[in-house]
Image (cartoon, rainbow, N blue to C red; front, side, top):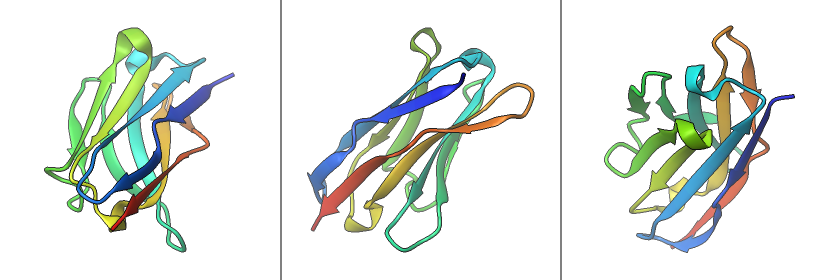
Length: 116
């Protein structure tokens, strides 16, 4: 059974930083493409950043230069370093993994609240 477990969310002041972690189990993590999504209150879920199995990264324009996605295959973990946080970054953040055979898995999310 595949599980993705996010952690690291919380309350932070605008301008502050947080690092989210997502630990994967039951999946060949080295061959999975991993992503972070977020869902702000009352809005649709949106892609934040992606890191491929080959460690190629991409991120949404709204977070470029502030957020960094990375992975540690030895720990089956993907990270999202979030700096210079803004109130509009407030959202539930979800980890998503896509396996080598194209199956998609989601974590249950971690809440990030940025106070202005």
